[in-house]
Length: 184
Image 1: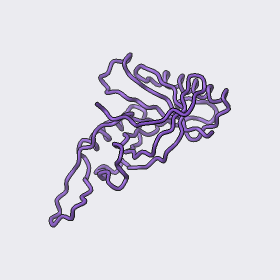
Image 2: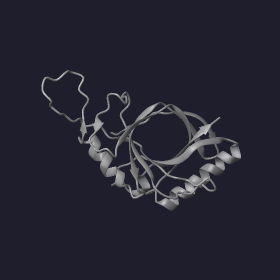
Image 3: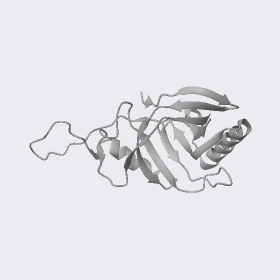
Image 4: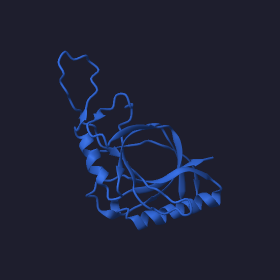
């Protein structure tokens, strides 16, 4: 079973849930919108990394560490200020397992991967199923922003897509969510 980020539901506006997420550590890469970052991140968590040794070594042995897959996979998108539509390349991130810190996560061997910490934050989310094609995501982003506009809730940053299932999961069984950080 894949570990999922825990959250606390803090409210609702129409079909949007408000959630409080704890701080998380992410492995992030630039992504061209075609999920090319997935291969880089998967290689990273399956051993293309340098484990941080906590025991002093007498010889320069380099070891790697396998990191369990977690969910969701997070994809951010550049959204124009005039409309909530996906318009180009963004980033893809894998969430590191709970309890891990930036200082104990293995170092990437590929310089395109960066390790970042995201502080606790409140996020508005709408859930949907399917393969998360660009036009589907754009429609959900528009619905999310409309719900927040009607509720008078301000946003911070850009919307992001969270995907929870393995690539081979049939579309009708897939869990996807569009979220954006909110200020209340």
